[in-house]
Amino acid sequence: MAVGHCAAGLLAAGMFAGMLAIAPLTAAPAQPAAAAQPATASQPATAAPGAPPAAEPVLTPGAAAARYPKNAAEFDEYFHKVKNWGRWGAADELGALNLITEAKRKQAASLVKVGQAVGLAHTPVTETTSDNPSPFEHTMNRGFTTDTYRVSYHGYAHSHMDALCHILYKDQTYNGYARADVNTEKGCTKLGIQNMRNGYVTRGILIDIPRLKGLPYLEPGTPVFVEDIEAWEKKAGIKVSAGDALLLRTGRWARRAKTGPWAVGRNEAGFHASVAQWLKDRGVALIGSDVALDVTPSLVQDVNLPLHTLAITALGLNILDNQDLEALGDVAAKQNRWEFLLTVAPVPVSGGTGFPVNALATF
Image (cartoon, rainbow, N blue to C red; front, side):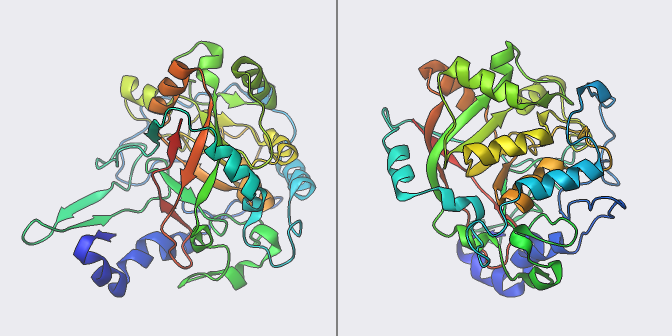
């Protein structure tokens, strides 16, 4: 990606499309017999060749923590139960964005009381680590007055938004479009990030599970269930409603600062797949976290990133991955306010599977 006077040249050369749109479309993971794995450019569950090894063994609560859906067959049943396909018409490409009404935006704007803004993007990680096999590259151009950025942003390090063409299930995207009709070498013909041209402006809610449990962070492998979300609602004195954006803080960046990077793709705290029905019932319009949303290992046998698949492909929910929610948590705790105006505005790359973003929370 180039910034300043270099942008036009790189866009014409195709580097921008190659890094941000085309590469993810060519990586289609193998699918188990009972349920298709998500077609995603997120980094694989094991570290990429050449990346440092995992810093520690995989942590998981084990099979005792599993609940419906527990396996690929149950996942398939659950997927078809919760999906929003056709809800906003056979030609819909916005998905849960439809839940953000003019009234919701006005309500969100009324939340700004002190005018304090908090950026949610983590500083780009430029080192090769176990959680970042594709570092952000920054090169100064001749004369040192312009520069070039290069980033393969899907994965577990860079703050970004996923478009609705980023994840597929059994060769279909959100709203039932066929892979062959959407995901092409030149970009997504439908459901691309260009549909976010006007951005998101809505009420954001921070779900801070470490604070709920009196911990600095959750250990990798810790699942977050519906009862945890509702316990947080009670503690924070807030209730999730239609059109809201949910941001889950697991404390990933706080843990990384204390213990160092680890292979997050193999082992992360996050939502269990069973929360999908609750997300639909509450009318959540956008969801994100400081990792990649899913608890890993997923506790759903033979299904990788089940909530990513349920959110994007079934519900039509865009995802904000790898957000830095540490400062947001501190500001929210200081003000004892867990709701705020959330603004997200990715660059509308035609056919893009997503885009790096710096979402803003304003109190």
